[in-house]
Length: 171
Image 1 (cartoon, rainbow, N blue to C red):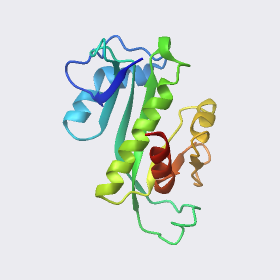
Image 2 (cartoon, helix red, strand yellow):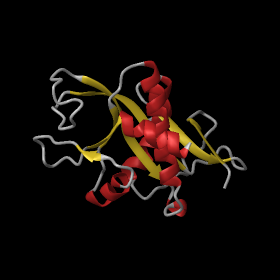
Image 3 (cartoon, rainbow, N blue to C red):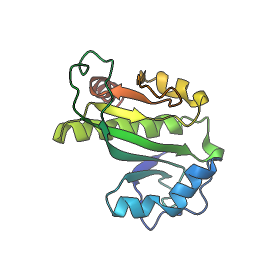
Image 4 (cartoon, rainbow, N blue to C red):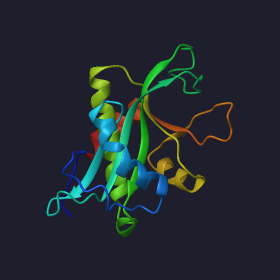
């Protein structure tokens, strides 16, 4: 299915999107476009070329400052805050789940992280999976657990070197 992933605009129909998770639906419907317009975060939507206003899925990226010590060998000696990119949200419409659209959205987010790294410093892409059942999805792309004192968080990250490898291989 030919599709385009682009920044959300007023032309995109946010009201009919349903991924089965109220919090993700409400963010897209009530906040995504406004936060994008104000440069608070950037939401990118996937739409079929034949229906360019119908949102099939989306992801939201934002800047992120990492202040917790990372166990990764490249960063453990840097106690000051480090810059990163945060995958704040990723959702696929109910009718399209299981068709690898989430993978395409994730690859797009990784690619955009590499673009950021070409302009300013970033150590990688971070994500807080909403539930433990989502963790394997990120693990298949080599996301690593972030070791923090807060064991209730599922935070994971993809080092920038891995982001570059993935985009060089898949794009």
